[in-house]
Length: 199
Image 1 (tube, rainbow, N blue to C red):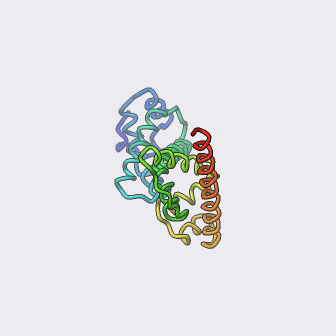
Image 2: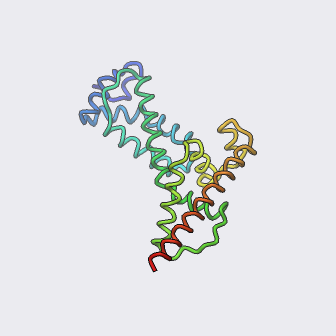
Image 3: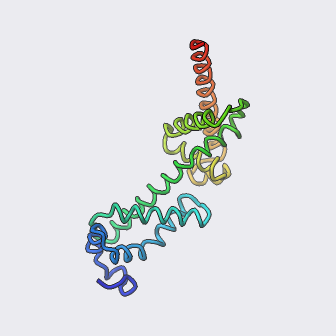
């Protein structure tokens, strides 16, 4: 098999390439890498709009995942769709790993929680609790939180992304913040009750 720069996309038998990648053939993997690097970079930039260093980290992880999970795929359109799915999966995994920071910002900026966290263990517990609350939200609400509190998008920009007015986005976020605040207060009351019982 020739190197990828010797063939155009239309000349490459992608079923053969993907079968060989799946079997661990590094030459075939190099063909895949060269042809799909730009697509992965573009998709990551479109999904997350991060700095170049972070984008390249995600693309690198996506390439590794693609190489490890590759299966025989017939045709460039199907392989392209599969690659896009891999990139999306890795990108959202990247977001989930950093959701703790978004949770803390949500508390600090909008919930206006004045309680001091005593020690690293309590801070971790609070962060994990908030993360769990966000992970239970529908996909659209989780994306709203990411765009607003982690990426710092304006209400107008988020509205354009979802086809809604800024006021509607603001209303959704305010209702979400109120719901999380109420849940946090209930959790604190329960914890206080437990402590009183244990004494």
